[in-house]
Image 1: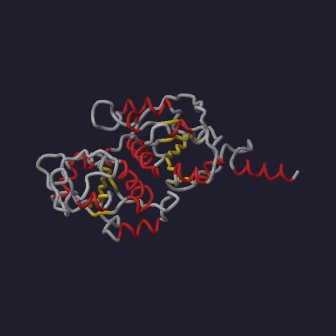
Image 2 (image 1 turned 120 degrees about the horizontal axis):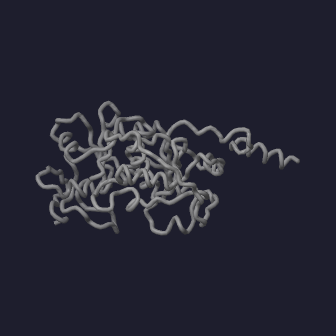
Image 3 (image 1 turned 180 degrees about the vertical axis):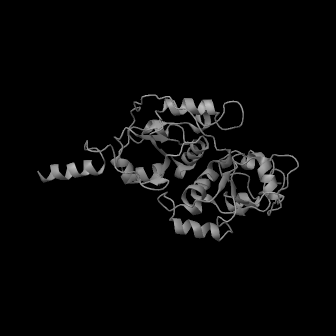
Length: 308
């Protein structure tokens, strides 16, 4: 009898007792593994994985989750660009997203590409999108349930009603910031070695830029400093201090970049969604800037062309 009572309370807390549809969604841009585990059966909660490692979703994913491939679903197949408005509408509809959905994104690599996904969703006016704090890393570390069964989702008919270009920076915007024509702070979130020009890319990652270094005036705050050991974001107070120590306090708009935009999406999320700073993501990042003709660079290591 006591077990039944406890189970009933648990279902009620999760919003699965038939009295109400779900437990209240926590305030803020993040949800915990505990909250998600308690709300997996809520039809209004859409869980979407955006990982980088091939096959990781198929080997096991959060029950009910669907899979979005960042390199084919969230980008244009021909241009170097994010998915078009029409392609995004098709994608969201296929994954059962409706205006009433609470969208929970998660992935591997400390949510790099899940944060990219959140940025694309926000760009197309989807407000009710959260990250699972800690992503796959924390879910798996807690030995929570994984499923290899494809989720059964009823396709919808999602339409984009708002586009937010102000969340995205272009090369011209970056150059205006460098030249002092735009009152914005640049933040390079790559490693110190990438920032100084000692290496072009992390180990095992293709070198896609012809020059090494960083954008002049950019501060260096590596993305990894924003997370704890378990993959969750540091506290709001810790994040505020981390960026303030680099001169980023929210008093001026911010433009973040990395190599291709995935790591900087993580920092975009921290700055804009957690701290509330006006922040743009420069998704062209170093693979565009480091290959552009006629733009200035700062190289602290003395390398200029292909590391020589």
